[in-house]
Structure formats: structure tokens, C-alpha cells
Image (cartoon, rainbow, N blue to C red; front, side):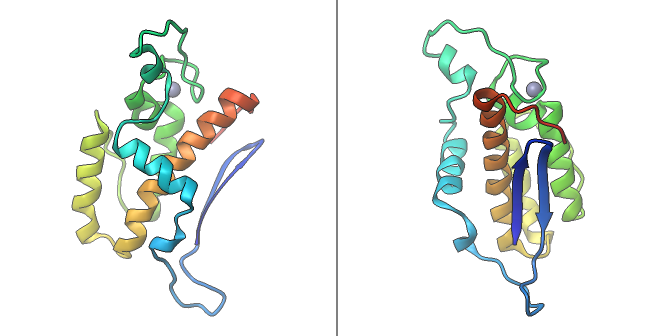
Length: 152
Ligand SMILES: [Zn+2]
């Protein structure tokens, strides 16, 4: 089971691919409808981050709610923020991959697809991409709307 839990002390990640009987378990049904929707929005660049708002000519002051160092663009939020990069590094270490840094979501997705062939548990690998994206977005929203300071 892949677990992401946001606490007041930060985001806690746990990966357990065995059930109580010690057998591997994973599958597409592990995605919640909410995670699926966030994944769909991400793949279609429909995440309502600050960049999406200012592209509609709505004047706002933007700040990344994860690192508080940059404006909140789609690519910064999901790829470049210090907080986000720590999350990707932790996740990829579990699968024995290294975070190489990506300049766009399309490049990350292409890389992720290529690694599917050489990664154990390829179905889980696909889920982890969406679950990680969803966890980043939910963390951003907790920081933005609930004022919870995040640490990694
Ligand atoms: Zn940031």
C-alpha cells in the first residue's frame, strides 16, 4: 500500500507493497477518485495554480506555497520547488532511481514511461506518479488554505 499522509509536521510517506499475508498487492483500483481527478488535471495542464489564474488576466500576487521562494508556476510547483524536489527524490529512492530534474511535466512523464520497463512493479510505478502529483497538490492546498507550514 502506498500511503501519503499530510500532518502538521510535514508530509509522511510510506510504501508497503505487502498485505498482512505477505503477498504483493497493487493495482489500478488503488487510486481514489480525487487522486484520479488531480492526475487527469495535471496531465492536461488544468491544475488551478497561480500561473493558470494570471493567464486568465486576473491580477494576483503569486508565491509558491511550498517553498515561498518563487512565483507559483505549474512547472515550479510540480518540478522545481525545493519541497517538491525532496518529495520526488524520496519517492524515486524507493524504486532505486535518481531524480534528474526535469524542465517540463511532459519530460517527466516521458522519462517515467521509459523507466516503467526497467522498474519492478510497473503497475505500482504508474500509480506512484499520480499519487505523488496528487500529494504535492494537496500539500500546496493545505499550505495555501489552512496555513499549515510544511516540512519534508
Ligand atoms: Zn516553490
